[in-house]
Amino acid sequence: MSEIDSFHTREIIHCKVYVLYINVRKSISISVGRLGKISFKKGGYLYIGSAKKGIINRLNRHLRKSKKIFWHIDYLLYQDESEISKIWVADNIRECNLAKRIRQFIQVEQIKGFGCSDCRCLSHLLYYDGKKDRLSCLAKKLKLINCYSEYI
Ligand SMILES: [Zn+2]
Image 1 (cartoon, protein in one colour):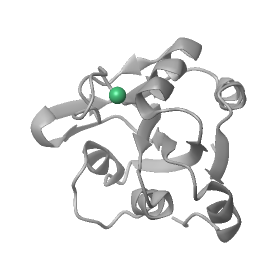
Image 2: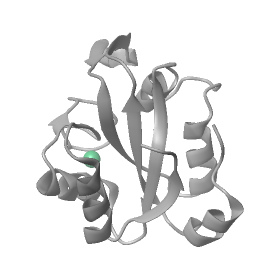
Image 3: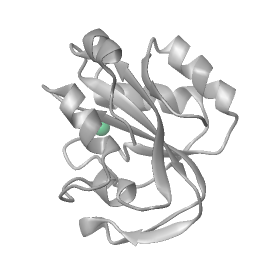
């Protein structure tokens, strides 16, 4: 997998909140730290995260397969069956609020307890089974900046 390119680095360096669109190629069941075993259906997932500083390092870390497992999302991204196909960032909204806005805009299933140890959300990982072009509308509506794109 590649990294965030220098053009986008300049554009998004001030941002703190991001959304990963993760494609899971086939259904898998994996252990996710204290959450225990979770089954992931084949399809697309939206993960909402934030980096108070160093968003570029954080995103590139997510894009790398080899790393020390730390966050819930690391367990999923470590798998051969998963890959990040898109990344958006936001500079005008907080992480939890963004997760909420996304849930209001598209129909998703929340993966309970995932990525939200530090807040009161039900989840920061959303399974999305709908049309891909709806995601473009969502990004436009929420003024998200696209900074990484693989074919989806
Ligand atoms: Zn939250």
